[in-house]
Image (tube, rainbow over all chains, first blue to last red; front, top):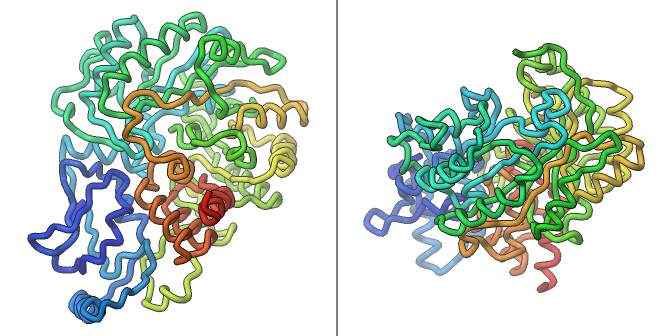
Length: 269
Length: 224
């Protein structure tokens, strides 16, 4: 993303909008500027801000006069008055940033918007996580902290060392060069994304040791990690995972409950 | 996509926060799913959701790319339910947000009768979702639990900012903007309702709960 210096009037509205704080007023030019290394190409500023198409020279003049008189205008906080925010053509490997950060861009590998897969949300149809199994989603950089792939790779290497198989349909899995070792392709390791999710499944008895492992690796990373653990309930709707999480000291209060109303029309092989 | 899973807050803060969403499964039941997704949203509207959205095309609250300067005094940018429903053009996730359990139960009962064949999930406090299932006699199929933050938690914002920001799980609502809205409400520059609308516009898929945001902002307004 870039901000057109010919249009920008340095109103500063876009600064707090940026989830990763990459926008600043460059004192050298007196215009809002995007730190390209920090920007994750989430398009929040471009898409989320409402816009006017006012004449930049006129707006700057009015701002100067009001500023000189020490009068503060109280504008709408989510408006770019001159439509100065401009997307750029993204090339590899930078395009990876947008694929993982902009929820309106579907991943080619999964066909769905966002960073993960259907997970347990369609488990009633896919039967991906069966009774006695646990599905894991390990998310990096959320909320709005961001993460680089070299940090994610530290986790995938550790998880691969546990003999786990990563979810085939997950976008991060598709960027691995060696899934058995959890290696991610080198040319994207320094790319920064708003968040990314690593997925795998295992048996319920391995949940405690894997959560401890994830917590240990997470403590060495320069980002935040959030874990979701899922399972298939029994016929009466009870979940064996609940007791395991409580016993092992992994507190929870929220989650997603699949009601089992889905039906497969076509069976994919 | 775990965009509703990790909403931050304690039981008191999350007790009236329910997202019910429908999702087709690629290759299993996504063909011809658009009318079913629209039907899901139509059924939701009967039960007065506080937000509604389609993961590909937007929600009730959206930015406007053609504002005039008058917007600074007269601004109203809430889309109609019909516009959201008619905007569903391809297989995607559709969601409706509710602020009470009775509405969720009545909605799920309608969904059961409608037999859309799509996967339906409730994203809420685990206990509350389980109560919904028990009340309507529907055993849970699968559950995903959100565990607490790990790693570099020093980078996180204060609790109230996290509550506002994490209602958009895609991370479209920055800590700084949530904090700015809290400050503006505290300073009397905007009402909690206005600030909640500003925040809601950044959530592209309609899972933001503007009512919960108002409650959080009202607490801040009282200096809590």
